[in-house]
Image (cartoon, rainbow, N blue to C red):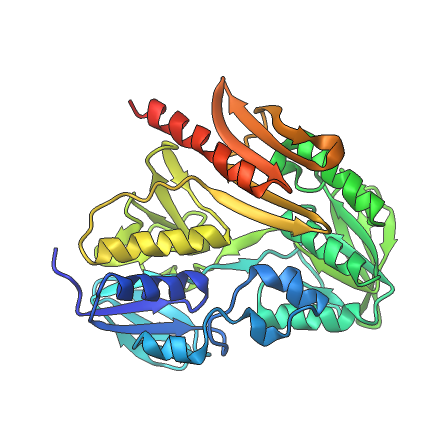
Length: 393
């Protein structure tokens, strides 16, 4: 395999930046161009729903690297100009401003966009939270808000609810699942999370969907549930998941199915790769396609793709990992926590809100979760690695 003379990274968030850094660590000396839709230098997204939203951090603190560190990468950053089309045969990307950017290797790192409600009306006071501007707009509204309704009980919805309560806002969380993060962590731990949120003053109206948003004179006034009940709100956050940002690739001929479909090397076509939230690749240990939306994967997958670009032929097969901070709870999740898994507490105690839970399917360890026990959870991760090794024999 010939090392490409030029690499174009489409997307200037964590996965895009980490791809550039990994290439330079691998002693790649060719030209690198980074194309970003937002006007900002690369910044971190996890703090948006916590430190930036709460005001504990100024927006600049979320920047991933200083200007000096970015300059040292010897890469051209083209910011505030979104990609609108890709020709995989000529390896050319067309931008919104009309630029045509060509490279020998292209890395797609365009991430995801926030999902909205079906037929969601355009009302003042209604927010999503994906980008820095979203966080700043939501914070401005929360500083004068009386009632916030968070539509969505997943990781992002739970984090926003916790941050808003810390700011002193009256918060109601709603969604179809029975408890916060039930899909991500299962029944046992999600019930503990529900107790934590209730103790801190979050009202939970879970187990029902949202029918519509209600507004007067162009501003939101409430959220109508599937039961017909209307929850009063002067601010609403819709946090019901995300959609891979692949619209610009629809005419490219790449296989698009809940992301950019790739092989085990994160390769979507010859000389074209995908990393981060937008990538759906063949994970050799899980016997199928997988797509991960978390910060750790953005870094690890970027390093794997950079290695492939410079000629190291290795599959990308990580143990998935994500974390979340809510109030004084810090959760670390390693592996896969399936809904039907058997769960047992292997360290600590639930009553103390300090424990490690182990998840097993058919007797095989698939995941571990640490609640305020990061070191112990990380040590238990080895059980997942050992189980995967056995399954591949």
